[in-house]
Length: 465
Image 1 (cartoon, helix red, strand yellow):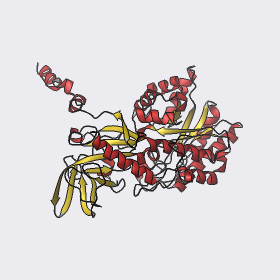
Image 2: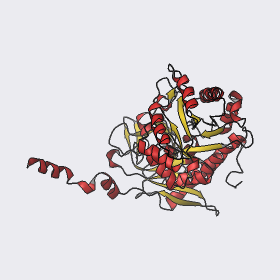
Image 3: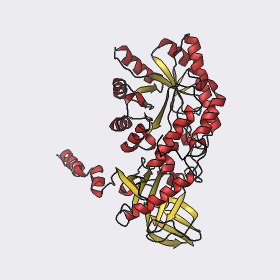
């Protein structure tokens, strides 16, 4: 086992204090090495050591409760951080990739992810995408009966494929605290709703008629879903697999894809819940899940990456309005749309640093941390008690390693920030590697149709003749 993970504490998770120390070192080093400053006012940082530790903790948690030899694939949900170097890092850590579009599949392939460790889940796969997936040999979970008919046609045309094929079901066990991330509600757009009239019988019959269907997939949701609800959904899926195999009189369903969904504690540095806690609960609630009869697939994303990413932005100006201090920074809706538009569901902790990248000292005062976009609600934090931020200081949005680097919103044509991975350099310092170059203004123009500036005026002139 590498030195990156030998110093973890109980439940196989990394010491939270060490993670904070690495983050502080990285912010200071980013300033010292010119990655962050007046000419580079926003940057994304990824903790490579922390990411490796998360991957190792996930693998150990499930291995600890599974029968020896159980096939377990932890497929990283690429949507959580769709950057090729990140996927490559996780592939080298032994993880797979769960992709939900042709673009994400292409990213996984560019990262060198093996086809046998790739799972394609999406509610709107085209015929061309299905054909490509089967040609590559990646696993495919059909979302609905119409998609299954497309797979029928591809399989029956004599196309040979090594792709494991399955059906996504919705146990309809209910929602968590965030509706948008709850995928097992009665009316969720994902999968076959098992409690709908005739649906369960249709699934069982469909498997009996298609020996090439060997997987069941269910994803209950992500942030805001309690462990008990996750476990209930897995139990329902396991019971369905047992029913299918009993009716078929053979071990037809050989793999259960139980999705992801472990919530992240955005309120503090404490890592709760842990993968080990979740795995132990599953072993208690669904003991047959780990007895070796079924292969397992998981699809964690946010919980693997969130803690290990930080968006750091320079404070361009400070002001006061209505008695409230306001720090105007370069991080707002373009990197954190969920937080800006739904702050109650997606709050972010903010850490204050001085212009040299050192933790800012001083008695906390209530202030807003505002972004650069031209609307009043562009706030990373409102009425937050922080050490007083001054012009030239740095505001760091914590726990942003998942979704915040992959959901850039080009409001006001704000450029995508550069992203850098960091790790200890072995000499007491910090080494950085480019993950994604910062977007230039010229690239913003090109992306916005700059090469076609005359397209509409030319079209109008043509129509007037």
